[in-house]
Image (cartoon, rainbow, N blue to C red; front, side, top):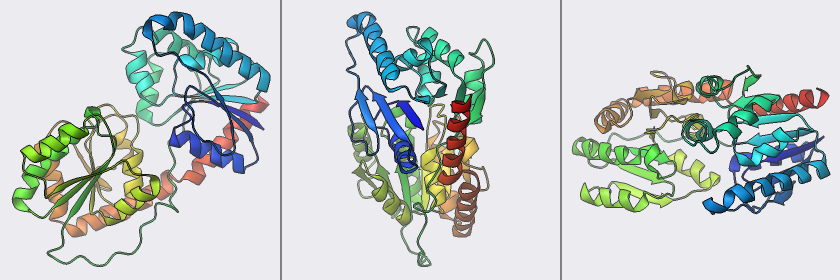
Length: 358
């Protein structure tokens, strides 16, 4: 079977699909505005113009170039990740079944806020043979924009529960340092500043508590300045962007995982990875997050943009090690049942085969 993905070739999620289906013997092509090393796939790079004034001219050229590539390689199925201008060609010159996977900001921002892309995104969604969504939250967001109902199916990011598997840990001593973790881009819409502010409340009661904020982003300097302003230099560290192996090693050392998102995030893959490592999760009640963090069972949900409430939830877990352990155990079970990578990879293959058959 021949697949063609239209996506950012740098995406770790795309690379996982490529690796999986290449191992299954599929012929895979990737059309991307970005270059990246892809094992098991042929990359077709499209030069993308970033100059806004020139884009009315360059967009049609890029669309025709993508259409010609699709005509030449003649895939059995085209799968678009993130609904934007690069998906116009397979919708407009439709020769193959089109599968579309909105990722969230394409619907929450480009469709709702950006008038230039709104009609294009709506058109692509209407032309899709199947829309795959990360969460029920995203299903509702998309459905209100469809003039005619389209087939929509849940297809979340699966978690490799064999890789994200905790190793046995020694029983903590009463005076052991509690380690809190954040693994996300350091951007305002993920709310990292509220977690730093929450630490100022936490260390008053437990001065040895440590917060490790892994990730890179535009707010890195501002967050480090906030840490200094709150005199938290001994309590907060920034290891930078981590690869998957380093993320697992970090999660293995933590006691609590925190996801203080302030935007309507469509999914919460980092929360699921933490849960798979048997960590309790403190997260905000935004977007699709309540679907992956079971309030009172696998974690605690709080209001967004509320550092005091965030601190109180973390303190509850610090002071209740048995609750942390129970939530971690239930979290691992939840991920293993509902979000194992193998389950969703198998379903994706069924979808591709059904689309090819028509």
